[in-house]
Image (tube, rainbow, N blue to C red; front, side, top):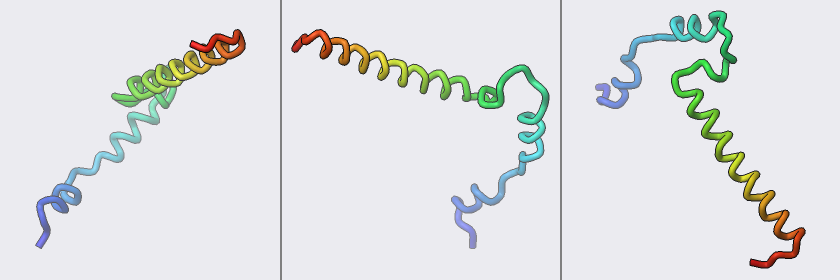
Length: 69
């Protein structure tokens, strides 16, 4: 009586113990950078925030100087 989608969600191997061991082992890397895609997420977010900050500062300096266009 189970559909394919629920079978996909329910009949999966449990890898919790392996993931716990991976993230709890001693390492010189901070925890938020240990995952396989974490560097992409962190540095992508920093790039977006840095670009926004530079744009805001550019606009503020133009306003302070009285430049319209």
